Each structure stands twice: as structure tokens, then as C-alpha cells.
Image 1 (cartoon, helix red, strand yellow):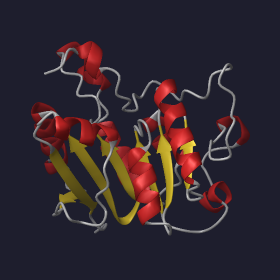
Image 2 (image 1 turned 120 degrees about the vertical axis):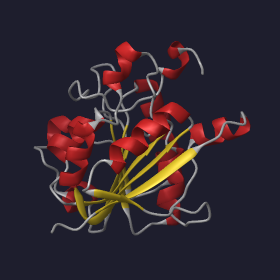
Image 3 (image 1 turned 90 degrees about the horizontal axis):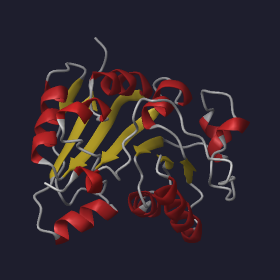
Length: 225
């Protein structure tokens, strides 16, 4: 296990309120979402400029997953949420250089975006890859995977929408697995490695090179009734 100081760099969407761009980091790029110019919830066609299924990534890091996913699935609209300023700027530059019109980036808290900005039953998928496991007991309340997340996800996902998650932390994987297994609103489904919806992230490549075992989960929102 890495020291907490190293693991704490991961953004995971703490429920401490939205973090809009800071005064010294003005909106510079057309893919950036300025929350001061919108009234929640978003209207997706207005945000993206056209129609299409929408997927959300919480904790986009340096933007590798968004870039690869958007290239592979140009019919999908992706909103990436990243709280850490230095990672957010890297992601914006990476995606902007790739000229991917179906991607938007927002510097904000992931749970706040789900709670206020995402229209009900409008997301096809929520992606959360390699969130900070916060291993110390006193910090575990900061974990993104907790009952509040599942409540927000169940409200935000469209029928048959999905939560997709990956982690390198075995203890956190068990927490996530238990949390979702105990929620009758979600059912785990297969997610083979060659599935076309699988795309790499920076952390995935980093931990694979380090020889870490990785755990992946794909959970379907069950139909009401």
C-alpha cells in the first residue's frame, strides 16, 4: 500500500460541495464548462450542441480514458469531472488537442454534479476508475463509494444504465463489491477484457506496469418494478 500522501492525489468527488474554477484559472477552452454560466440541471443538447447518449466520468485525472473512449465512440457525449486543478488542466489540454467535439470537462465535485447538474434518468453510464481508497479509517468518509453515491447514481442513470468501476486496491474493491451487492437496484454483469467499452486510463497503465492486480466491476441499474 502506498503512503496516504501519494494516494491522496486521486480525485474522487468528495461530497463537500462543488469546486468551480478558481479565479486564477479562468475558463480558457471551449470544452470547459463554466458553472457560473449555467443553471442546474444541464440540458444535454445545449451543453454539447447536439443530441446523443451521455456518459459521466467522475475523477477524470489526466483525461486518457475520455480521450480514448470519445475516439472509439463518437456517437456518445462525455462529461468529465475532475477536482484537482493540475490534473484538470492536463485533461483539458489532452482532449482539446485531440479535437473531440463530444467531450466536455468540468472542474467540480463529482457527487455534487450528480446531485444538482445531471438531469434525472439521463445518463447511459457513470465511470469511476481508480478512485482514492483512503485507507486510513478516519479518512474513509471521503471515499466516493458509499450509499449516497448509489442513491445519486440510481436517480441519474437512464433505464438499463450502468456504473463501471476499476480499482487496484483489494480492500476497497471488496467494499465496492459489498456495497453494490447489497443494493437491489443494481446487478453485476460480465465485463470481459476485450469488451469494446473498455478503455485505458493513466492509473490503469501505471498500476499494470507496477504489476498490481486490478479489479473491475460493471453494474446494471435494474428496471423499476
